[in-house]
Length: 86
Image (cartoon, rainbow, N blue to C red; front, side):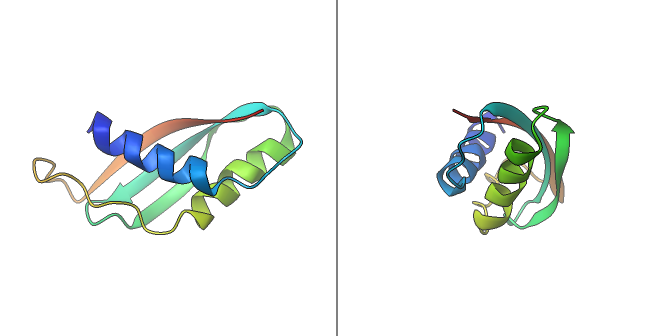
């Protein structure tokens, strides 16, 4: 699960738009076993609306995520992932 979450986080980070704002927003994601994004929201705001919006934009731009490893059999999984803008 941790490895899959790390791959999802890396994919989102690569999709993050450039921003002059600084801060860390924590995203709450629900991802289906097949890699489809079910839901995305902020679980913890950075305190900066630009950073929060950039974090949500990164999730939308990331596209489909990798499928869950074979050992994970639930229909969907939730993650809280911090995304830092510097």
